[in-house]
Image (cartoon, rainbow, N blue to C red; front, side, top):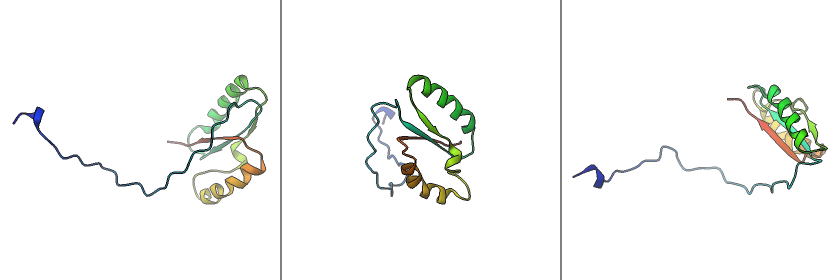
Length: 105
């Protein structure tokens, strides 16, 4: 038998997903005049990247307001469960339109 006509069993190395997927929120038509929050896990250069993002986004979309990561706390580590649980209420109270979530690797 030639390899060209051979059949092989294939095994997927991941198991089935146990997480139910939710519908994503609709995208904003524009960022102009919006409030953008930055959430970060305090791991990899987010403090540097956030400054670059703020400068570039401000150049492209006038009237942006930014809320820095220190308002929310680290999304990784000992307090991560409390920080993440508090995010929806904080984002709503601060009238946040969009979030940049930075994670380290």
